[in-house]
Image 1 (cartoon, rainbow, N blue to C red):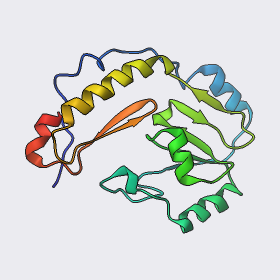
Image 2 (image 1 turned 30 degrees about the vertical axis):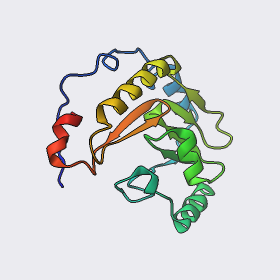
Image 3 (image 1 turned 45 degrees about the vertical axis):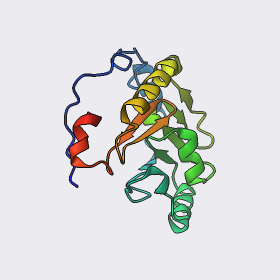
Image 4 (image 1 turned 180 degrees about the horizontal axis):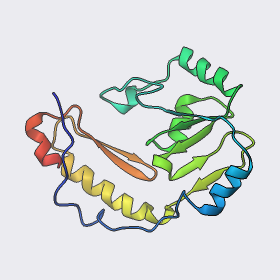
Length: 171
């Protein structure tokens, strides 16, 4: 099945609100980083980089040899694992101490050991996400292959296993 992303129509009223979030491009923050001088850091995505893309997120498990490669790399340079998954989830899946972890597409960040970086934003949006999750589960429960995956600061509706005829319903 070849699925092509399409614009979604008829946004759910509970998820169409805009929430103002702080900018990662804050000038003071950028100036502090530049003043510290250049330093190489490695940012790796979990799904599709450290693990293969699979039809069910639960099946994307880090191979022991890849875990050891990441551990070895982290001895040389700061390493940050970036994911749309929840930060705590991806941290448990990678299971390498001392790395930085960015979860929920940047809404939950902990820097590498010694960096002092720790940030969690959009906590005020959690009740809205709870309602959206309930609604999405209700709307997709009768679609074979549809999977609603809740993350701390996001919700994914996986359609890799949904028949082409059912994609319009998911949209």
